[in-house]
Each structure stands twice: as C-alpha cells, then as structure tokens.
Image (cartoon, rainbow, N blue to C red; front, side):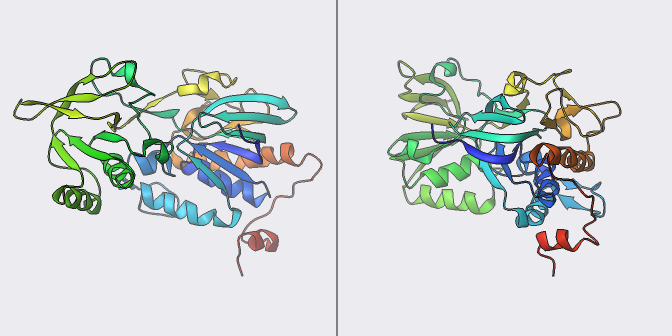
Length: 342
C-alpha cells in the first residue's frame, strides 16, 4: 500500500451535495479529496439522469443533471479538489482527535481530520445479470467495473450491454484487448450516437464482433471463464470464446459498506443533528439523501444548505485555534480573492 494521502476533509460521494461542499469548505481554507464509486463525477445526476430536467434549483429555472454537475465543477475550480473515481470506501477508522484513516477497495489510504458522507442513498452496486453460476467467476474473470485498463491487455473480452458504459469500454479497451465482442439483446443502443457509430465502424472493418442475443450460461473452471453460451433473438444457440466478461446491466442503489463505518444508522439512513449535520461520531458528517433528521426533505437544495452548515463546524476540527469570522461572498474581498474575482 502506498503512503497515506493527507487532507483536511475527505468527502465520500461526488454528487451535487458533495461538490457544493467543496465550495463551502474551500471558502474556509479547507482542502478536499473526494472518493466516488462511479466512473464519473456527478452522482445520480450524471449517472442516472444526465438529461433529466431539474426545476427546483434556486435561481436556475431549468437545468439538466449533467448541466448542474458541469456548473458545480466550474464553481469549485478555484479550490482544486482531487477526485478518486471508480473507488469505494471500505473502512473508516478513528486514529486521532480528530483524525480518521479511510481505506478504499483500490488500496488507497487517506488521513483526514474530517469525513463527510455525501453518498446519496448509499453506494451504486452493479446489477448482476441473470446467468446461472456467474457468481463463481466474479472478481476473477467476470468484472462489473474497469478499475485498471491494463488488467485487460491481450484479453479476449465479451462486453454485455447497450448503454454508455458498454460502448465506452468497448471503444476504450479495443486498442489493448486481443479481441472484443459486444453483445446486446437488440440491435439498438442507448449510448451516445457517436460511440455507436465508432463501434459499428470497427465491426464493419472486422476489428471487433457484434452479436445480438443474451448470455444463457458460462463455461470454464476454477473461476476462469472460457466461453459464453448465447441465445439469439431467433432462438439459435452459439458460443462466444472469451476469457473475460464485462456485463454492464446498470446500477442499483444499496447501502453498501456504510453499515461498517461506525456511524449510527436508522432505517438505512444516518441520523444527524440539524446544527451541523454531524453524526454520532464527532468529525464525521452526513449530508444529502444519506442522512435523516426531523423534517428532512430529499432535495438537492436541502443538501446544499446542509453542506454550508457542515463546513462551519468542520472548520473547528481543522483549525481548532483559529477564530471563524462569518463573511459574505458579495462583500468580502478575501473570499472574492479566493474565487479569483477581479
């Protein structure tokens, strides 16, 4: 394991509430790192409804999920947060007062004075395809996410799915894989048109294969897949030789490892106080859909409010000897300097 990454605040979850927390913390001179299980920034907004309209962001009559993410990313640029995407926090350990050691499934270790859980409804977990016995191959030759591309060099890969993730990884892994076969239940894709065009061009040039149908079974011993049985739409059976399978069947929300982080839970949510949205563990906060308190509304704007109050209390842990003077961005020259306002 590499040396621990030290930061003032570690934010778990890079959705809108986590992103706005970067802004509020940055105004108060706190440095942030963010960890998110998804392979992109923006949480549910970017992953589940990037083009879905949002109408209740104050001052913005209409914005899409991706549009809101893009604007938040622009807003936090002055504070240079560091993102660790495609990683899941596994453990949080209290090692000081205040100081936490946080470890991810990618082997990274962080040391932070404050931890902010902004994980929406928990962690996004991949949906397992209904293929008998697939569990025996998971983690060895069946993978639901690409953490390190190099792991798939010279592999014969079967990618299953028809959305952006399936098409993106088809195109990204094509240059290093021995052979790629894309399998989808129909010859119609939900991915970006440009990605579909690129994939079809590779197929037309004989550089990869496209099959229409569904996986019905797997072959291989000791966790190593050697082939997949495919049933076509005409009910004809065929076999795809492969040593790696990447199914992209979408994501579902589960509590995940949050239950092991040492914070109190109430109906799979994290109870917090309403003064600073702190959990039962001093120094660990929860904002956004993951928390609960009397009168809680699961709205993005509520999460923004929670992030602002959280930052005020977090400042006490990061700078215990420094008096916090409340300032407005409209009138404070020091805040405007941080934001790069002339």
